Image (cartoon, rainbow, N blue to C red; front, top):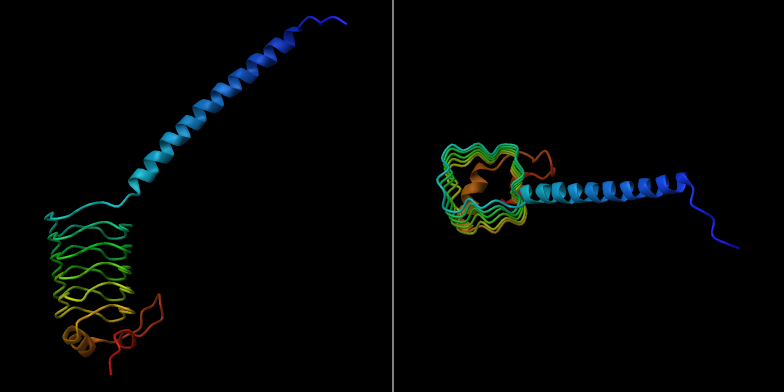
Amino acid sequence: MGLLPRKSWDINSNMFSRFQRISLAILVGLWLILTGMTAQSAEAENYEKQTLIEADFSGQVLTDSEFDFANLRDSNFSHSNLRGVSLFGAKLQRTNFEAADLSYATLDTARLNRANLTNAILEGAFAYNTDFSDAMIAGADFTDVLLRRDMQEKLCALAEGTNPVTGRDTRDTLYCQ
């Protein structure tokens, strides 16, 4: 039994499979590059100590981003996903957080004077030394938010409504009497 000579179609099929392997390698490489770019753009942003007065972040996903000590007065974060965001010491006077998700955010020492928190979700946020003076909180969900007693009492004087997403009454989430 001797070896049979190669037929021309065998040579072509080997070349075709080599072409397929090269094409597949190129496609996988492109996929890895594009996937890497997508993952990079989804990473948390750092806006620490920046002046961003009247900035428009409405409707954005900003999870785990940092805005520590940033000046964000009169900015718009309405309908944004701000879960786990750090706003430590930020200036947030008159900022719009309507229907924003601030769950597990760090708001300690931030100034939210006259901020719009209508229908916002602040579940689990750390806000012990946060100033919410004259904030609009109708429908806001403060479940498990750590607040100073005096600020809790001020918020209870303003509390009304039910959060449309969580179904929780604002007064109940603040443990108002």
